Image 1: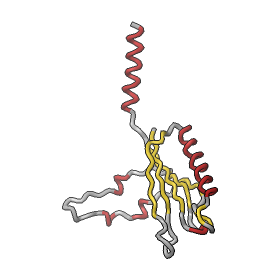
Image 2 (image 1 turned 135 degrees about the vertical axis):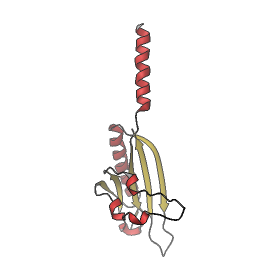
Image 3 (image 1 turned 180 degrees about the vertical axis):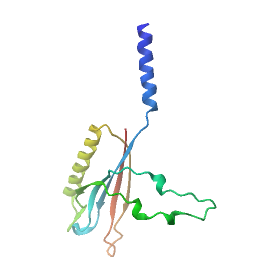
Image 4 (image 1 turned 90 degrees about the horizontal axis):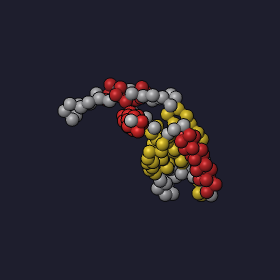
Length: 148
């Protein structure tokens, strides 16, 4: 009887846990690849709660959109954490010390979130790279998606 009761308690705890809603959090790193340290590199974490439904409209005929009724300024949040990191390039090219410094900063944030119970769910990255002599611009962006 005790084994049956113990098994039932464990099973019910599993069912309750599996039905719990997950939370998600996104941390974004933007690392500049502008030569000479002129770019801005940051780790960004939005801290405001947003209801995307307030900014979502529905098209009924495929062409008519009510998005013009929604102001971009209303979609911007005011509360965020911004951590300064270093640019990939210095005056003479790639700066490996800057890259290692950024890795240490990102690792610190990942470890802190892990300690808070967040699980790294997936990582997505992209790049808009320097297109040559006449360009001189570019960013490397990475989104870390967490859940708990």
